[in-house]
View 1 (cartoon, rainbow, N blue to C red):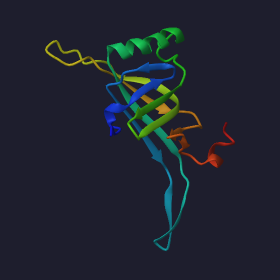
View 2: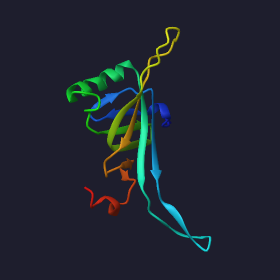
View 3: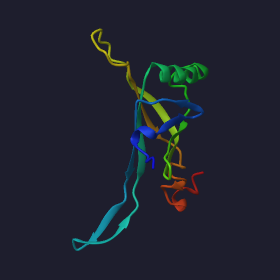
View 4: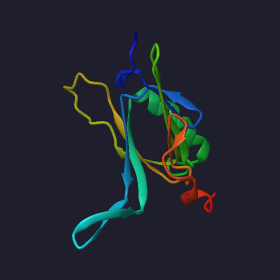
Length: 149
């Protein structure tokens, strides 16, 4: 049986399907435990956020460059949805991040003695109230976002 591994994932940025050398997505969940007299007694909601990074080779950057050219600049690219998807024999994983604002953070390292592909790092932050869905299930409770949409 084929299992899902980290190398099984394909990545779609907006409508652009591309090969990504490496990708991360981290969720900051600001829920906090409350205490009475130093003893845990429930929790409260806090701020949430999500961000990540894509490592793109020259081919993937060329695909993204088309979007930048259409937008008039790299900063002109409107926030895009990013989907990470993998399928095995019986397993399937789909993670969606909505309204991702892209930011080129590291251009390729220029080293004439290197035998590695040139990699550009593109960071992103989730900006949409739809936030994150994991296997179709929203991360945030509906009540937290319904007034925002």
